[in-house]
Structure formats: structure tokens, C-alpha cells
Length: 396
Image (cartoon, rainbow, N blue to C red; front, side):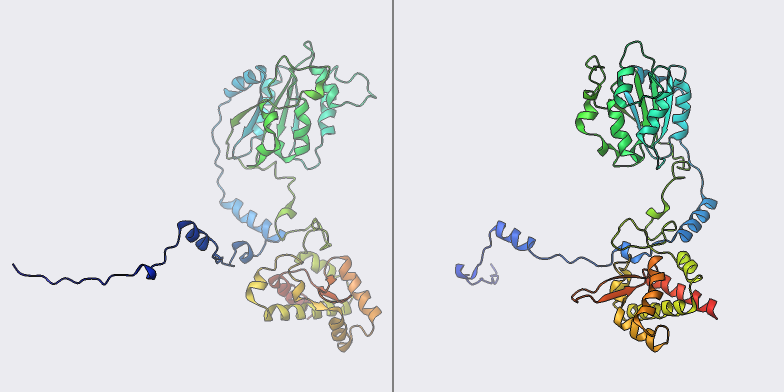
């Protein structure tokens, strides 16, 4: 038989092998640092101004198509039956539920008194709900007495009291109101039908409050001990636009948009950022020297932004981020004196005071120095460039 050649591997010494236990290998791998990209989407997109936001909505409304889920009003009888059985109803789902709940309020108006609460209104309070409930005959004993939640729960806890239906739109918009009705929801003759719009709305209710049920344990003598909701959850997806609910929405909640606040205070997070429109209104009312000072500071800020790293410029969203593009007070005074804008400290501070009062220029102490002040304009590079172009065009 033919012989085949075979290769024999040389014996390996056990001294050359290095075995790593599995748990050591895991921690060795886990301890290595992971590299994360700095190209965050939120840092690459410029926030919309109020004008840009309104223009985008106008363009979108032209091509928008209204998609609504058909609704059968025969569900009203089932909901009324569930309320009569001692449950309260909480409606969730995408789309406005206001129209359907208002129709349901008309349906149950034959069974008792109805109070509709628009919780999406920013100024709504528990007092407004109590004022509406006080109009129910027999609830308020005297016209001078102040109605309280305890008095309402005590009144409707009696077996001979009428039925009260509370229809609450967008309950999750008013957490204080949501806490207030927890002392009314377990009253036998108070029935609540409410809607929620946000995904985190169930976090308003504790587990014990969600598990509470109406029953014979309700005591009108101690109404404050009866706290809970007794919710039945119903999906009421309509896909209808939130036209009425968003009427009172704060447009300044959009990042970078604020038309109602002119002043920017970097120590106050509630204060909204500066807009181009507000800046143009202020610049139109100041003196020629003040405009020259503003243009000088803006030019130096844009120059510093051009010489900085691109990632730094893109990540500068709020007034805090623009600080490292600013100019020290001493440097600004030297430039203003050389340009014959302000020849002394008093004149420069008088010109800056007008801008500071309206939020066009903000300042902060320079880190690592004693008393040195940094001044800058709280606008992104793109909008500051556009503002300077408009200012130069008007001057020409």
C-alpha cells in the first residue's frame, strides 16, 4: 500500500499556554472604554424661531389630511352603565377626545348634574371646579361660605343626594387637579370621565389609588380618608387634531423660540432665549452709537466663532454655550475707545445698560479670574450673522 506523508506537530509545552478564566476575561473586556460619536442629532439641528415655527405649521396645514377613527355613539350607554356600577372612566389614545366627551356629557345630563372641566387651560385651578360644583342646588349651604372638597364629598356621600358627573378634558395637563379629584372619585354619587394625552400620565396615580374601589366602606363622616380613583381604562383613539387643546399651549416650550419674553437672564432657566425680531425692535429704538457698539461686539463674537472648532459652534444652543465666543469688558472698552464710540467707562456702561435691560447682551464672570467680566450676545452664529446683515442694510 502506498504510504502517505504526515506532518507531526511538535509537542507544546504547558509553560507556553496562558489560560484566562472566564470571569477575568469578562471584566477585562468590560473595562475597555467604548467610543461614542459626538455627532448628536440634537446638536446638529438649529432650533426653530417662533416665526419659522408658525411658517412651518402654515405650510404643513395646506397638505394635511384629517384622519379620524369613526366612533359609534352606542358606547355612551355602556359608559353610563359602568359609571353607575361604581367605576370612573379614564380615556387614553392618540387624538383629541374633547368632542366625544362633550357629547357624552350631553348624554349623562339626563341622569344628573354635569360639570365640564378644561384641564388643558393653563390657568385652570381646583377653585374653578369648585365654583362650578357650587352651582348645583343644595351643595353650598350659604352664599358666603367657602366650598371645599370635603364639603362636596360629604354632600354627595349621602344616599339621597343627586348624581354629579365630572367631565375632565386632558387631566394630565393639571397634576394638582388630578390630586384634588382623588378625594371625590370614591364618592358614591360622583362619577368622573376624564381623558389623558401624554404617555407618562399614569405616573400621576399611585398603585393604591388605582386599586381603590367605590363601595360601602365610603364614610361621609371622614371623606378625607377615601382617596382613590377607581379607574376603568378605555382606548379612545380618534386621530383628531388637538386644535382646541393646543390653543393655550406655550409656544416658548419649543427650543430656541420665545416671543413673549424679551429679556434673557442666564441665572433664571425660565427666561426664554432671544429672538431676531425682538432684537431688531430694540435696535431700532437705540442711538447710533449704541448700534455701532452692538455691531462691534457682534463682529468680534462672529470672528471668535469662526476661529473655533466646528463642533463647538454646533453645540452652542443656549446663552451659556455662547460665553466662550464673547469678549471681555476690558477688550470691548479698548475697541469702543479706538472707534470713538465710548471714551470712558461711564459712557460704555450706559450704552451696555440699554442692551442688558432687554437681553441683547448678557454677561458673566470670567472663569479663573477675579472680577473680570465676559460679554456676549445670546444668539447662535447663523442668526447673529443674519441680524448683523439686516442692521448693516438698514444703516446703508
